[in-house]
Length: 382
Image 1 (cartoon, helix red, strand yellow):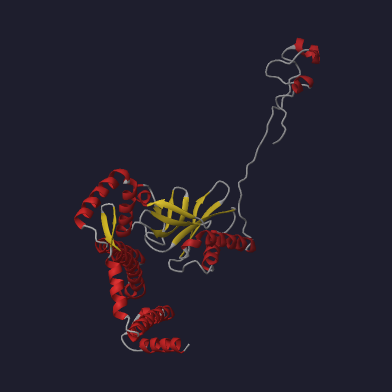
Image 2 (cartoon, helix red, strand yellow; image 1 turned 90 degrees about the vertical axis):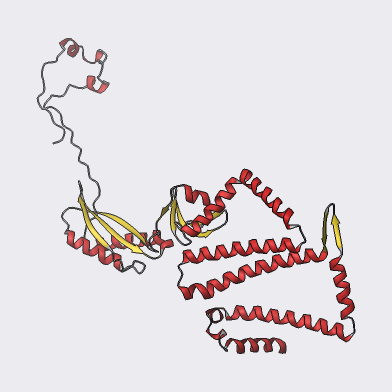
């Protein structure tokens, strides 16, 4: 307990000394940094205690020599020769590479990007590029630490590259497409895009594919090559705003100026509708049975735009009802007419005398033959 309190106190004192006190990463992530540094101090204390204990019993030189001999012992697997120390160095190099990659991206995100006011697109591209470069260099160093002949490794890498070119063309295409997305930035993380008939928010642009978050909380995984080669609609390419429109049909007889003012007031009252640009409403056309208005408004809650549009539509409906303005609906008038002048003489006397005993003529139905033929001037409805 005393050692832990001493570590926390030492860290707090160090964070109050310049230049650490002026770093944004120290101010934002102080609890996280304190936990990591306390762990490093504990590890260093354990190693120091072990070395001092071995020295006290005069065992340090013997333990170090035995450990060195064990690490330098070569192991042969067919024609491949390596030592246990090389394997340990390989594993340690990979671990340091992964740690360094995460640390650099953490520092870039918390300290560098805010100072240079980088947008999210370039910042994400730089972080991804740094991640790839660190992994590539670390893997090369790890292979060298393993004791592999780099000349043979270069030949093997060349052959592997040819195999990739023939057998993994789709993977390479998606990888290169991902790099194009990161640097050209037609699609960025956080953009609302439409692919086919699905709309979602870009959450991640990976090595092979990108992840799109849909409205139903599911994740759509799209290969990067599809985002480059196919038609994609980016609804937030020019800014982090989403414009929506509502079409309202108002019955004739209403005052257009009153309707426009009511629509603008209702849309502007919503908390998630932006004031810059403000909502706009126009009388679009004179329809057959209604005045057609279009209400346009913008929101910065890109991922919530269907709900914002629904809220505004509900509010508009309530406001129109409260103002006594009627929402029009399509109307159709059907008129049936029949001739008024009845003919007393049958065009075919022999059929009229026969009555209902004769079968109906072609084009007649049973109802027509059973009843008297209506006059040509009678009218059902006028």
